[in-house]
Length: 316
Ligand code: PPE
Image (tube, rainbow, N blue to C red; front, top):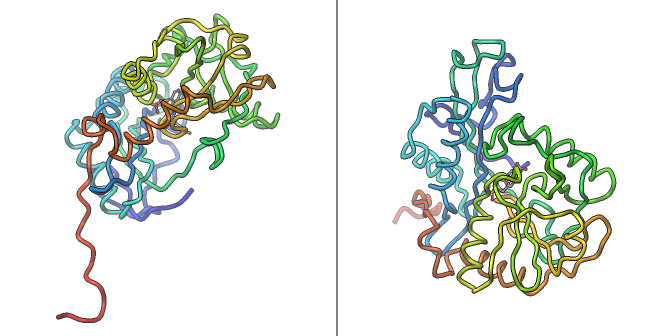
């Protein structure tokens, strides 16, 4: 990863190398953490964070599910995200990772007596699935691992431990030479990618699995649904059978890291990518995130950057 200079940790900025935790932190042992992935993009007005309020609201919901009281409120976390971007001079955009975890002091599975620590890091992170992925699409494979179910771990909370499920799937398909894993839920219907939501296009309409299919309720997914409505593209949330992917006109995946990424193969079945509807939604999305869409204003939170240091030499 590309290191930045400073990380916000429990209320203050510390040097990147000093943002450390104790090896007996509860979150390290049991995955008792909740986190967000957020992106900021370069706009004409400065770096702007995409749907920051929505991400912080989801962080709060994730924490609530695990009864983890966040020691900082929404406004403090928003300010902290701005502070991290400004302190690291990330004008060209970045990926932002807020994380709250059960800290040091208690072992065992009852976590409510352990402290809650919070950190926010930001760094430059390019195309998640490779530079070519957004143009040409990726090769995806359905993993033999099923997605965590609502009766085991709630998929709707973005918690550290649940990602062991994604990691198993990702390792499996990566070793098989594929770029991304798709997971079926316990009922055998399509759920999520290892770190993305999924859409298919059938007869001019978007089809996407609903929350009860054990998906993470993605903010990029919500964005794409809103943009599709505006474009007059019908959106149907319903169970999706695996083989529907093979017969789809188009397939794409969405996520903060992966953005809106076409899929050109599922289980070695070729799919035209990017198809016309994927391309239209990509265009709207990539315009919106850089401030060039009519929806941008409502979704972007612009960061005020420190004035650049005066150029060396003359003091006038
Ligand atoms: N499903 C899963 C399982 C998931 O992890 C993500 C985000 C999404 C859907 C899409 O959600 P949203 O980002 O709100 O549109 N995955 C994050 C983690 C990626 C990582 O490697 O870490 C992300 O995209 O930031």
